[in-house]
Image 1 (cartoon, helix red, strand yellow):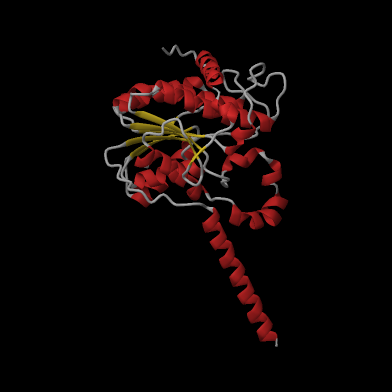
Image 2 (image 1 turned 135 degrees about the horizontal axis):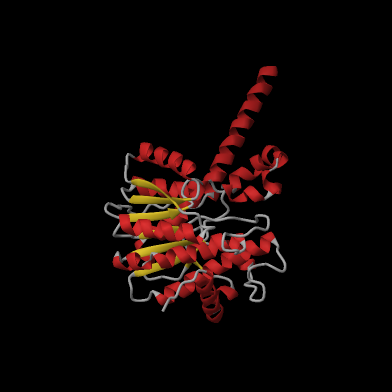
Length: 324
């Protein structure tokens, strides 16, 4: 009987593993299978050395695009770049420093890019920070709002001329379903009076939705489309400031059970790729694309045009831009 029990345990274990992988595949959502010929196209991806950004760059490189990896840590960026070049045999992948917590760094990145390239077809504003301790960018902006929204607001506006010159072109802003719980605190936008990591994160993701809607209106007739994206619940380094998800107990005892239901970074990248490349949404600028490749409704506050215009003016002031 001993061998029968052993055989039973082996069969049960194998079945469990198979079910877990099948569940992981199903929960990971659809894979973008559209035509992806990007010869002669130039792409920028922020936060490109890890997570969703890394796999987005890898797929763009496989499709023969020229890709600029805009990252804060040049050592990690170069390691990621080498891996991508080796796997895709595309040598036109570049590391450029861009710290979204420093407007000076963002301006230097944009200036260098425009010296080196005369076209930009896809801008993917992927980099983000989540639920970090209270901290500020170099300009004194609350870190989550400063990196997730203000930094990308500045970068995008600095690159708009080359995006228009390269039209048809696209901008993809990574938001989150967390925007549904977000509230733009007009009396304490910078969280100087009260700071709650979760609320600040949700506010920053709602700000991205409002920015996308307002930018889409401003770009009508230019050939530049802009979208906000929710890639789903993805296992990336963005959770690094959440001890409840990164402690040893969670990693050993809980994560294996949650693993089948959480997207891997390459699965999370599929929605970004769809939004950046899919021809059928070309006339849907301003839309919020969900993780199942559908155009989804945003929170009611995300539809508030007056709020979007107010946030734009504040963002313009905080970045010292003068946009007509």
